Image (cartoon, rainbow, N blue to C red; front, side):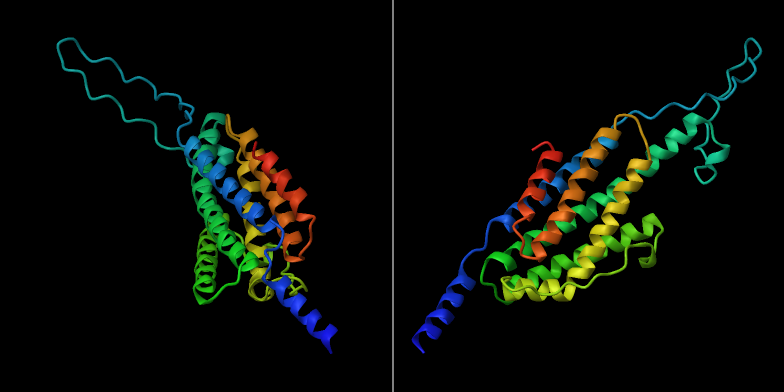
Length: 250
């Protein structure tokens, strides 16, 4: 009987011990990713836009008469009909679309970072109602930001990869395992959605942005892979996290 009691005690102690630091590292790099995305969003708003060719000059006025008011600036190009636009007009449309999509993607990335910061608490500490409420709040923020991003992308749930359920694994803290069992598939879907946004941003080519977008996309791809490792309680998460850190230039 005594060996059995010792085994139970050992399991209880191990349940209270802090797991490896992969959860902290993941939350830290996710925050770094969100910050890098925010910096790129701010930078995109300061880039120079190519100038549209000016309208033809008005006919000269007669001597002695006051010059008429200058003609209005050329109207904004119709970005809904790219085939009818000049190369310069298409570039302006891409820059405008990129700024809008970056802003919404950045809000989604910040929400994901907040969620994973609270999820780290569930994974590494004994938690109560307050911590679980915080996780629930940040999770809903992710879904809210994701709905705006999905609307901007014009895609439906059917356009995303099919949901895959997450099973609670032995070794995960009960609160963390419960969160992943109940909500893990939805978080996976949010990360799929975010990846699609990054792909769209890379397709909206604009001057001085390609390299930064590629770094962000690679970093997030490694973070997605690391998330899969985390929910399986797999030590392979650490190499993926470090790859994401390096992609961000850290």
